[in-house]
Image (cartoon, rainbow over all chains, first blue to last red; front, side, top):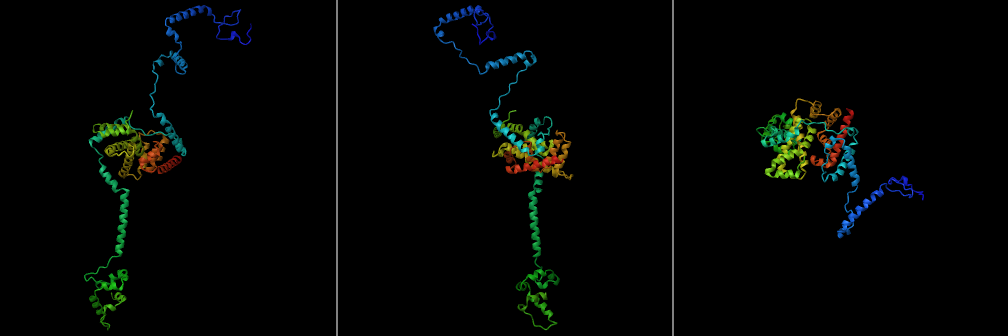
Length: 272
Length: 182
């Protein structure tokens, strides 16, 4: 019978020993090893017959392997086989990275987002954005190993910076607040001085009256006197002294004694 | 190196017997961060060393009164920033022989500084940063180099987030202009 669909000669799984009588192929040593295989199987079954419970349990493989175990194992074996030729490499222990912190992966996304945000912010400044963000400063050798000790020595020896008290005083004196305060005080003082000097009362002299003042002094303070009304002028004037002075002027004129009440403001000013 | 957490350091500090250990761990944990922060303000390594030591001394003295209203880190940063600015003011006051402002002197010192390893463009960048007013310089360094979030910066500098963003924007623009024109 000819097989039109499938050519047994092409089947790689069958190292065929063609039997001219039959079209099916089979492994070349099949019949020679068949008896041996069958004998072993019968022997193991006879052994089990002595253990009826054991023989009743189906012979299933209950062990499982991780997914892709054999594929990975094959890969590992291939790598190992490749390394066989390189003894130095084999002697180096493969690097096993430390376990990541538990929060690392949760923070990773936010860290990346933040870095992106910083880069976006800097994009607006083209020159700055183009520069490598490196720290150009360097510290002296072993600086950070020694700083802790020096700080501790300074703290426990009770040393302080020598000029600290003086510097704090200078900072206070030359500070902006003090300068502002001084300027305010100065302006107020100057204003008060100018105001008071323009309002300065006339010195009355020993007799404490306007009558004792020299004419020039009065004229210099004309502005003050001109602001006085009649009653104020009356209060300031010593009547007796004024009368004397006025009477002394009567020698050339024949006038009666002047009464203070009848004297007008303008007359007083003129007489003075 | 595994550092102690802030809570652990404070707990060690509260115990008289472990106070020394608390100081050791505090310095180990924060020395580098504070060093680089201060260095970008005062520029010189020797000056940074002085300021860093003063910072830790001040921290140590003030740790008893630390109320934990803010994070230990932001408190340390605040002290370091203030100490750096105070140092610069003192340096400016002490240097009466020069007519140039202190930032100009720092900028010039960079050119011959043995502890500066940047190339020409990095030098220009540092000089550009030194042209900024103090506050803007600090904001720029904290954002550009230290990549600190604005919220954290706000706690350190006690300024609003909006003001910091504006400050950074202005600072970056000025730096950009300096780099382009120089």
